Amino acid sequence: MKPTLPATLLRTLAPWRNAPAWHIAFSGGLDSTVLLHLLVSLAKLENLPALSAVHIHHGLQAAADAWPAHCQSVCDSLGVPLRVMRVQVSPGASLERAARDARYQAFMQVMGAGEVLLTAQHRDDQAETLLFRLLRGAGVRGLAAMPERRPLATGHLVRPLLAVSRGALEAYAHEHQLKWIEDPSNADPRFSRNYLRRQVFPALTQRWPQAILSLARTAEHLSEAQGLLDELAHMDLTAADQPSAFRWLPLPSLVLAPLRDLSDARQRNALRHWLNPLTRMPDSDHWASWYALRDAKGDAQPLWRLADGQLHRCGERIWWLPSTWSEFSDESVSWPDPRNPLELPGNGQLMFAGKAPEGPLSIRYRQGGEIVEVPGRGRRDLKRLLNESGMPGFVRGRLPLVYRGEQLLAVPTLAGLSASPLDDWQLHWLPQTCDQGLS
Image 1 (tube, rainbow, N blue to C red):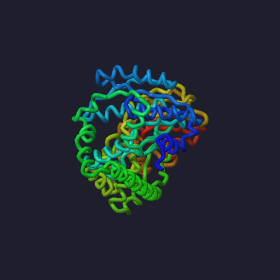
Image 2 (cartoon, rainbow, N blue to C red; image 1 turned 30 degrees about the horizontal axis):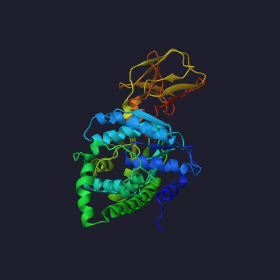
Image 3 (tube, rainbow, N blue to C red; image 1 turned 135 degrees about the vertical axis):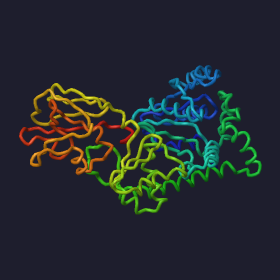
Image 4 (cartoon, helix red, strand yellow; image 1 turned 45 degrees about the horizontal axis):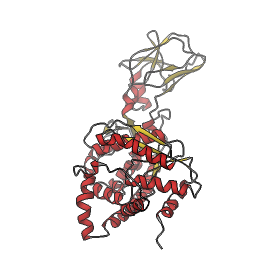
């Protein structure tokens, strides 16, 4: 006997029954209306987490101005608190993608630790997503379509209806005489998904009645394949994820040699897995820069520019630099009382450990030609000392140099130059951390 829709939903949500709260993404359309009604009905019979609804108002069409009131009316009738959030959709090549990005940014603001956001995408949506991405030439990760669950902010995004057809949702809505919003934009064939839904899928299902079910099943197979690729990437990255000599540098990095020993396909798989939380990846035609970086001579310092940052190679190591890394001021800064830590604009913090030297001091950045007194070695060129240390080139321009008058007093992180042999102090630099660079 086929399980009922409430039973299917309850089984799918079993792992999340102890979450602090469930938030329902409530557009007011058919799918989310059914999901909301189902959950409220189940909550009368089962001990579920606290329910609330979130409606995102994109402001993209005049008709949408009436939707918050409708959603409020539905939530009031069901006894569910509703939060309406207005978002600004950035103009761009894809209005659909921009609206989605704005929507999920808003959802992340709602999420608390361990809480769950429930969205109402169903099996037909999954089939549409697979075909849409197939036509765009997506790889295995893209063709795996929408996962049933994934992290979102400090909680989880769960799609509990992915195994349910649109027809089953429509039947439930009519049985319970639910009222929902019909979005006029859903009839606009200029939007790719609408074209697939209204033009392509009717033709496919007329010839192959099980087309939607088969495509959704294919997405499940591809999701499993992607899981195996992720396991392989984890194995390959474990060998390359060795500590750097610059542990104070808060940036992701990998040793190049273990990656170079892999086939090109495994290299791309490992890098996609590593970079996926950090940046949007290029398509398969734009990996030539990776090979150029990988194969450059050892004394070169090539980089690969990506959408949200750069991949740098320094010697036999590659480093990820998010776009925000370069956002700092290289103007001189005074340090009137070195006993207190100094915040550097966009460049972290400097502090002395032990008995700090007498001030006032100043912070400057490299201009070239700096000379520093090295204990036991006399006056040395700073550039040569940095070369000897192997410090990555992208750090050197933002290395804070501590001066007393015109004397270069200390250089943080550089052996022998961050501590005084006579006075009892050490200079410590905590570089600016970047959430994107550390995720």
